[in-house]
Length: 487
Image: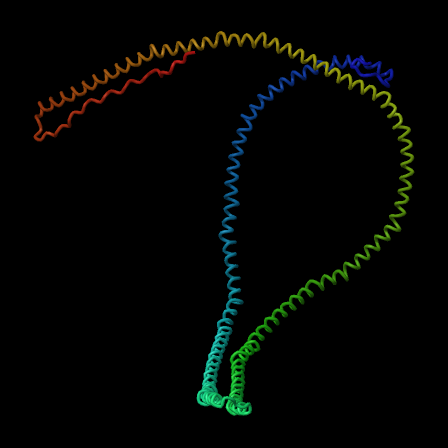
């Protein structure tokens, strides 16, 4: 077991022999260094606090003020040299240019799109629409009048050719015949079936057949002819008032306009395609085909030849030479350098280094204990010899003396200085009153002497009424009174 409590395992005689002298020497050397280090650390903390305060007062705050002033100056410079020119550029150049460009684009759009479309709408589509509307309105009015006339005519024909004859037939033929037949049957009591059938055929069927053949059939044919004529007229009106104008508008206005627009678009596309082909694609393809491709093939062939016939043999020779040299150099370095160095490091330097490091660490810790003990002793001496007597003097002598001096000062101010101030104020007011009386008396005596020497004036100016003497100002309190604190 070692001195530091570490178990001695795998340690040679060299380690055991150098351990104690090295530790003693390290303690002797390190102890002053550690004590000096602790003293310098304490002094450095104090100096650091003082230098920090000085740094803040003498460097940071002035530099902060300078930086703030510099920042304000830089802001002003940036505002004058950058912001103001940019604002002027935007206000005087970019914004007017943008407004001009917008105006130009608006004018172009208006001149190329809005005005032609407005003219097309106003002078082509609007008249055509009005004509179509008028034609449809006229066609509708004519169709309505025709249908109304045909309806009225058909109604009158039906009324005079069908309804009125049927009513007359019913009133003057069928009803009397039916009544006569009923009366005959009632008178005879029984009628024969043949007589009844003959009467029905003669009085009902024959008139109805005649009515259908010679009245209803001609009326139906006339109505069919009228409907065909009406359909022909309506078709003619729709054709020449709606279809023909629309077809003419489509054929002679919209179709040429669409063909022109399509031709313009195709021409522009062909021109753009031709320009892109012969100004971009053809030169790029030619450059790639006749310049880059031969150069690339030549470069590839050159690189392959260089790699195959030059670099490969050189690389193989260099690899073989490097391997041979590496093997020889490795053997020499291993047995002439590495093995001795490893042996020296393992059996001499490592134990010595470990012991020196352990000794320095042990000595540093022991010196720390000693330095802290010395520091605590110095701290105790300073507190006992300086701080405690100074605290006792402060609390026992200085503080009571200061309280007594404050009490004496308050008593002097209250009992001596305040009455003296009041007396001085009264004396000052008395002197002011006496001086005022003397001035008034001298003024009156001077006025009496002037009247005795020169006489009274003819129109003596009215003297202003004598104002009462102003009250004297209060005497200043020479001693500021403060409330007395009782401890």
